[in-house]
Image 1: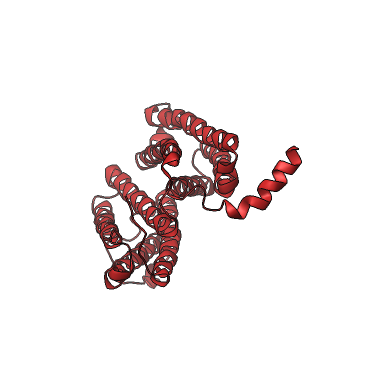
Image 2: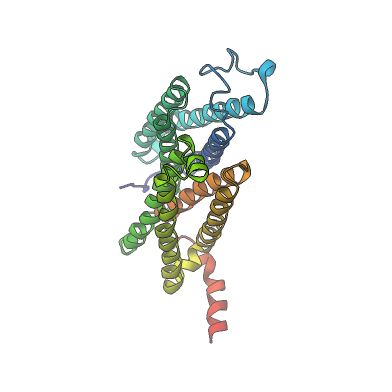
Length: 308
């Protein structure tokens, strides 16, 4: 799909660094959006794109206003980073892969869509479908940004590892679906209604059940990577993080339900873990699984010596 045969290392390095900042800003955007939703701060700023008619609403500042204001500020920074990368890719197009400006233009389009949905979310008073679409677009931005960065950093993955990519797609899709179900839970108050009145429990029950195939798929990836040995050695940081995030996600989910979603830290942590799971799975899909094989030779030798 991508061709990295001709590029300027200096220009490519700048775009990779901007992309890394973009990934962090997007994860922060998703988490702050979750915090805004949990703290019922989505309408703390009654207008859009300003807040109380100004860029910095000091006269109205409180925790809820700050969350909504900071969420919009982070979204602005994300848009600025993406626009900067798009402009630079056009200026440097002769020294970069020819696919880059096209993909960055897709990111610019997604940012415009994201901003439009954000405005509609405020105008429609936090309509559940608008909130869900807002999160979907944020995840698409995150996945696309990571995909671009990995293709800039790595050479084309050998065809024998296509099965590994397909294998990783399953938990990624499942985690995305699980995240959307979670947004529907919080934006429709289904969790509170189910736990308090034992009604409208379908969404909550679906959210619980979906955790099973996600857990199985991630544990299967870990098992296969360990069986293949080199796959685990070359990707152990990402794979170990997946396992820890999975355990943490389950614990936070249980704690959120036990506290009837009354402790924002558990709900926000749950959203952060979901974002990190999606980010790591996307990275594993689009990175070269043998990228650090040479760096792990000494560690490989140590393992083999231990086994002997």
